[in-house]
Length: 516
Length: 97
Picture 1: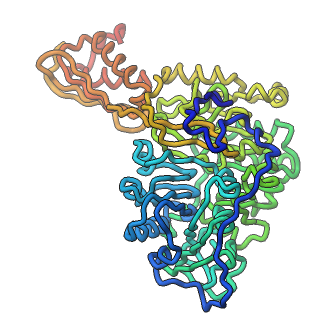
Picture 2: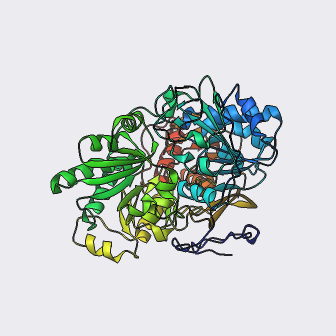
Picture 3: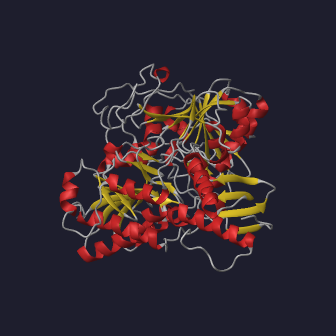
């Protein structure tokens, strides 16, 4: 059937309570029973929880065919944990597993082997890109992958949509009882936010660390009372790839122009007041918005109460300069963010559920005034795609995009109108990640479009120098330069389900037809 | 006009295209590889065929490696490759171009 975002969801996926997307607040007030894990009591005092190897840990958990395991991606491109655990599982011959990861990327390419030989038959993830994206797009995973937002993943675990049998958690430090943290050690990730729900809803929890410290390893993101086993490994990751070095602010005039207009929209929105809150993505124009934001804050003598997100150096700098009073951190993107969360008292680690879960009693996204986000594609209904490339291949991640867009009072998309000859603004996006209902402003290098739902913003911008155009005019401009794109061709096989944050299906991704 | 030597124009940078033109016994063969093939492949092939007509190319293999170039860039690269293959450096028919 056709859902509220205008997307066809095949009936075969609408069963066991799975519904099509029906609007961003459709499940407001929804009552549900939270899931509960089945755990083992450790009554007899143990000397420690250490096991000798990853393989021994897998054996100790009794992992069996058909079970679900989970991972986080705080180690980002430097992650060794996923491949290490999957190799041990592979050697043990366990098959038909579902991997519930907070995100996957090129560091996790051993999963390609596991997908191809049936070790892994199901995947739940935010990021789906590189080789894993190609293999899944080609239909090689047995079951369609489920693409979840960061908030949606926490929700799916807590409401029982997905049950984790064993969570394998890389931690930069742990004591021998499993009090574990992303702080300190050799592979410092700053935070371990994405495992916030896993540790409370998985039947078993295994910590992998390369730095064992004396108990108590406090403050601990993960409490030893939730941990079954601890494995000391040589290295959990490559510190050079965990956090990028200084993310430089853009000098690209096109990106700066977009950023300046985005900041101008914030300034004129009527919400730019002392104590405002915001989040910005790590893309070029999103980050560059902070430059102009600072100028407006100086000019108006106002401060930001808190900034949230994937934290980056430009945000940390504004925080150190006093423009931002608190940082809420669910992911440290660079070394500056890792350093700051370690030492700065008003820089707080929050869990993915606190960040963005739509089914708890009010995640921080609901308190955002502004969010600035990127887009691969935006359509004339303001729907955004950040998951599927314009060739049909899976190559992105929703991350917190749909979560923050639904929560924030003003959601601003920043993107160039065309990338090489690919039109960003188009008649119809390849697939919908974030529904247009939650997108307010689209800022491009050729003009700014405001969602007609937001007459308040249109009125606020009327007498400003913000270069307003309709979204259709932006699309027409893009097509004038690039030409109108031909529709992509797909086979019938569904290779991925795009789950909206509330568990409804917002879109499906089909296998692209092979091109020459 | 018939070409007798091979020539190259353009780069493999994003938003550009590289065009290799080679002599061919008879007719014109166009080989397109494009980073935007799924959405613009047919459009680019048509553009190339139209340009072959306009320029009066009779015997050539034209290999286009496109990195998402706009039409104006594609045309310029094909024309440049063709004139280089002809050794033509002046007296262009600007009316036709």
